[in-house]
Image (tube, rainbow, N blue to C red; front, side):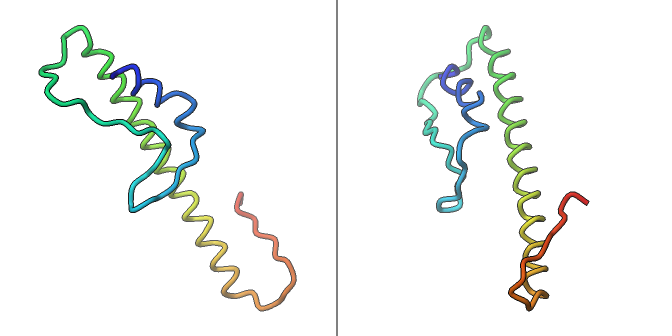
Length: 95
């Protein structure tokens, strides 16, 4: 189980096309927690901690990308709402 989760954090997770479906983030990886496993063996604790840290980092990266995309969309909407011409507009988002 840890192998599958660790693999999902590799470059494939960052390269996956993310989309919202029904309010859930879909990455193409479908994983379900196994039932009735009992306590995590002590020898797997460090791997589980590293996996959690990797998942939290990926969540942070996705949130950063979402905020950036939202800011870009807001800028485009501002220009579109004030620009009445059919001429193209240059929008400098880099500053």
